[in-house]
Amino acid sequence: MDLRQKLKTKEICYKYAYEQIKKLPKPWSRSEWKQKRAKLIKTECETCGSSKKLTLQHTKQPTKFREFRKRFIDKLLYIYFKSIDIDKLINDSFDLEVIPEKRLCCPVCDRLTIRYRETYEYNYICALGHKFKQPKIIDYYKHARTKDKEAAKESYAKWIKFQAKLILTDLYDNRIGRACLLSAMDESEIYMSMKHTKTLCGSCAFKEDRKYIK
Ligand SMILES: [Zn+2]
Ligand SMILES: [Zn+2]
Image 1 (cartoon, rainbow, N blue to C red):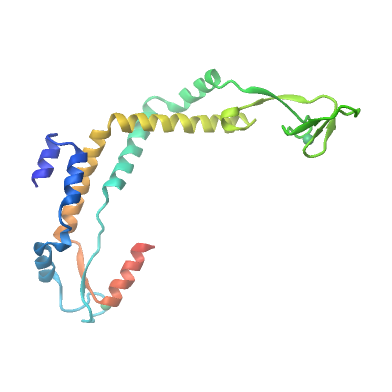
Image 2 (cartoon, rainbow, N blue to C red; image 1 turned 135 degrees about the vertical axis):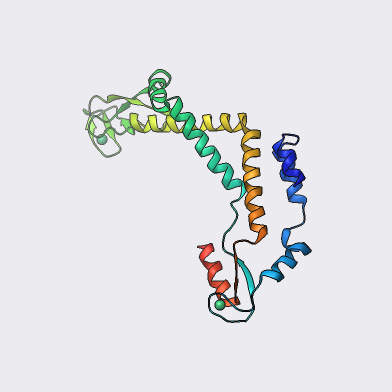
């Protein structure tokens, strides 16, 4: 296909190629498809032998562009994070960059919701009803809304990884798009060749379709 060649040689970008593909008539509306189908369909169902409402069923579904792209990005991130030792990097930068706030809490249960009461001997009371004279001071990680350091670090790590994903996918958008669109085109070509098909009757086809939906 001309479009594929142009995409391979980088004459066109994947976005343009994608738009062109979407404009093409659907394969099953082309006469070529109908003829091929008529040639391949057998006179009885390959599962039960019935000859009622025979259809040519595809036994293999093509992988979509979006799925290829997702897999590609996952792999790219995996390799990238491994190469820079992301966990160590996050650990180090967390201690440098994330400065917790000091907050007052209940010395018994560590709850932050405490109330000051002017006239009582035990001036403070927490949401659970613990009474005390002096609140405890603890670290509070505002960005993750937690006082748990590990949870704060986990949320920070998630954020860093998400930012890296945005940057990498933006940086390599063309490269990822081209590779994945070419893969998707290969699969769709195999699909359209009808290599992986079988003749099924109406009720067997219905059962197979339900399997795919699940
Ligand atoms: Zn059947
Ligand atoms: Zn308490």
